[in-house]
Image (cartoon, rainbow, N blue to C red; front, side, top):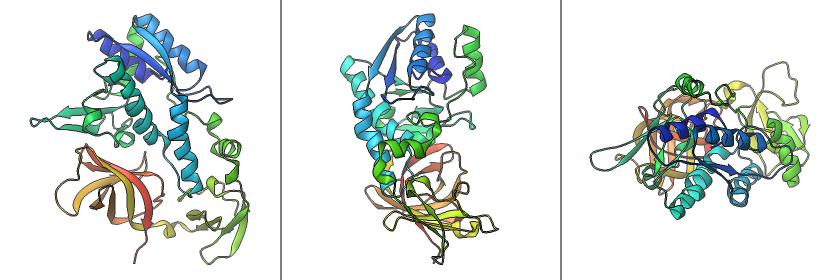
Length: 351
């Protein structure tokens, strides 16, 4: 329970349905200034208040050591490699449906439930499937693509089959204190959503002066760390050329950021690693057709996907796409169903 309306209503719905519910708030970080979203004293207090009002057991579980060893270590490592990480995906993989599910097993619980907007179902052959949430504007299936058969068999998403408005209406009906609480839009462990300041403090080795150049190599400005830039970024470049410029490449080895006009962002495809499949293996056919999403709030685009190894693929877009950022997730869909996904390792240029 994060202390937000979605997990609060999820716990309440299960309690109303007769499940024995234990609400657990996961303490992920012990960092100064972190008290927003799903982290910090206010989040813990809100979750506790809901449990007390509805009448189910509540606990606080400290998983900060595991979080530091997995999610935070990956976050810093990806920035060192010049990639733009997706810590929510890593948290779902390592914490919420990793260490936390292991805890549920040890305590003898049948399921782990969360407030994610996603849906699951089981077919006649016993195979589990993962799909988008009913409310497409709140769908979170993208960050759950790492789940496989074992996790899906033990996971419940009580609000996945309803809209956000219905979730808030349910909270209001019960008088839950979080009914009108705003959605968190920040990375939970970054105070004030200031990624640069967070990395400066906790990974100071990333701070190195370097050059911002145009595609021809002409120096346009200086930067103090490539970690401040991501492919497709337009604001905060520190350059003025009279035309709209974007980050088109980040080269941590040379400590260089390349900027250029938007048309230089177009890519024909990508290579991905760390690929997982919901069914345990890719769909038949090589390559197979799918719709892919290359950023959390991006659009689905038609593509051909070909497995090149047990955990790697090549994706060829049916039309060029802009802003393919290494480190972000690419997720494969068949209609509303998630087939799998992985980490963007490399964007493929035309030709």
